[in-house]
Image (cartoon, rainbow, N blue to C red; front, side):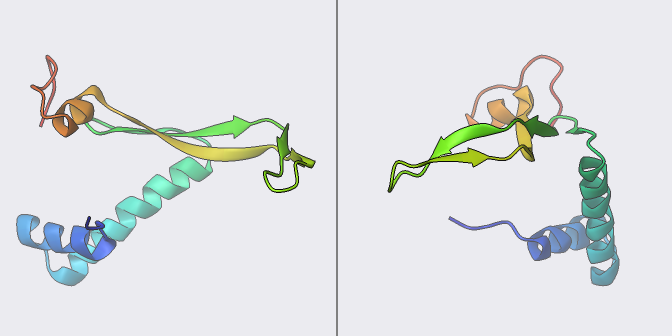
Length: 103
């Protein structure tokens, strides 16, 4: 299993868009920074035909140490979740794209 890295993404931009390698890397960093800043502010990021990144607030709850069985409070926190689009789900499963789906 290969991991898709920033370097791979920047190289794809370089080969497919035709920007220089430095411009491709800068463009990628700008996009990722914009996504990160939007999520930091608590807003969702929706990328059409790909999915939606959401920041959710989880409340305080009681957890249990699996080794000792001792109950431990888990503090409230924010978590990042991703909900894939129907188009992405269909592509992953090798199914035809849903009506109105874009590639």
